[in-house]
Length: 235
Image (cartoon, rainbow, N blue to C red; front, side, top):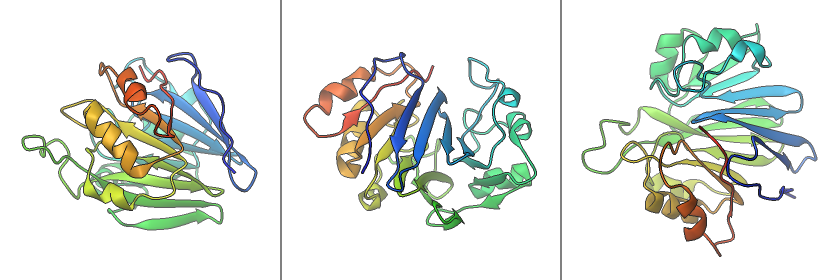
């Protein structure tokens, strides 16, 4: 059973704790923009960790070393070659789309549709992330970048990456926690995010990567949907 914490106000909370079906805690730490840190069963998982390239600066050398690093694509607000070595330990597993792995020279390239088992209770799926609106396709072309579904002890987390409300979201099922981006023209409009949320129907939704978008509108537009919209400070 998913355990939900009460909603806190925007910018008031930097972490959320969930109880996975296996009874273990999953702590999600909201770093900034698209950078996320997840703690599970003594393991540290980072998604798109960026240090100086996105303000405020984050010093990852002061944070726990990574067991897993997931990178969605090579844009500078998602991939930071300076921050990554600060997080490595000998056993750190790096998973990314092929173009990032070509730059990192470490880790395993995941294409859309690939999946792996890191441990009995940690599974990872790479899913599509791309633009569809005419004139935006060049930002995130189809087939290049990844979103991820991360399953921790049975808790299913969808990190969409930079994407619009693509048809493949129809196949994203049984999601407990979803991260959906909202900063047009690069990702989704508020209306697209709401449509995507209603397609996926996560129990908890964290809009992220929203820059100056009036993100509070998502909570209003999803009122009564059954989705717990939690807006955190990603700035």
